[in-house]
Figure (cartoon, rainbow, N blue to C red):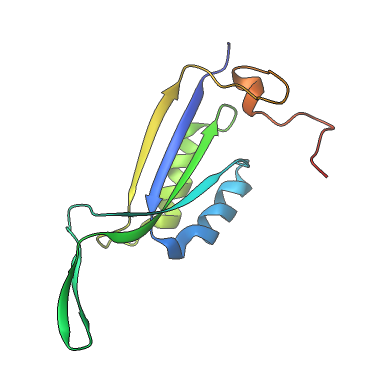
Length: 125
């Protein structure tokens, strides 16, 4: 395995998903997994009023976007994500970066960087 494989997890506001997807696509990040998640950070939630009663909301809805890169520089992904997501307010989110030891494309058996790279001339259409 000659190319370094890196997984990047981005947890942020749901309202930023489309803008983030477009920005990552522009720099060549194609494969994404997106999940709806709930969590709390340093703000520990907030209070809301529903039908005249005050409630403590401790888990806030977020999205978690996961991608694995080997050709697009990790620093470029971090730079683009921060540019799109930063509002300067609590709740902008977090980015986690992991070095992966291997990856396997189940259909072909390709391993390492080959498993996550696009194969020229091949499409799912």
